[in-house]
Length: 371
Image 1 (cartoon, rainbow, N blue to C red):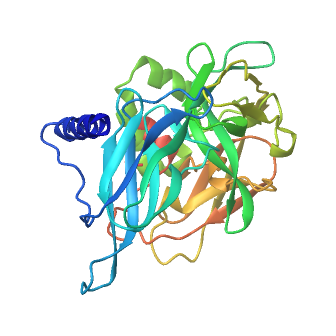
Image 2: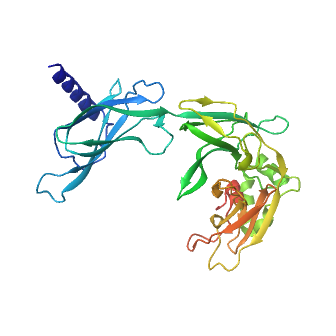
Image 3: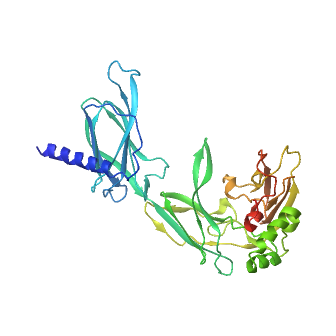
């Protein structure tokens, strides 16, 4: 009788979970799972505290043998429920087959930091009852810190990348895992990080490739931006000049390294809030890099060109590429301001026929042009 009451209670929980789907939305349609006599129940728990995790979405994917005479002889299907206040869940009337059981919830991630759901592989025979399945999830972590220059002043509006290692096609590379932008105090915070090892880079400050006179004009008379855009369309790169005293910040890894090899590794545990991951950036003189692409069968766009740091030590190049300031349809280009260092200029032609033949680049984005 007690077992019957428990089964009835779990059935009610499942019915309420299904009824609670948001109004106007329908659950994703999945292939129906044939009925059988198998049963799986268990609990979703925190990997560290072992406490139950309520309201987690639990998914069961299965491959099973279809009834005699069915074609094909084997099939697959999926179903999901929501764990109750004690993290419990159940799936009943299951056929014999091989199943994977996984769970997810906002603020939690899989144990070990993998992108996929935490999963259990289960094999059921006819009449099998599995009553103690445990799906473990880990609380997500966060990193925070402050960006400052050599005299201690905060650095604002600079992107901070959280980077981790991954193996892609047998090769170990670094990949971005999170991103934030420093505020008016130079502070940043990146959340929703799985436990693991990371390096932190202050990168990709908004380019300001305009001279001091033009910056003053834009700041005091915003309507003049229209005139600036017109100048760029008619005069090309000569409309956007860079003063010899222009300064910028080179990409810098925590705590103050210009290269990946000397970056400090940051390790975070599940649910950890790690602060004090500060970076000191050096102010450097920016340089203009100009030239032309020849031989292209059609107009050149800014998306065609990238200036990549040479010898990046396996870091995904796009993370640190310098976008062009201005690119003319005839192939003339300008990058500014470019921090000191060694670079590779990469051009990958894309057919831009029919997309307009005006100039493009970050400068025109600043002044409201067609970039």
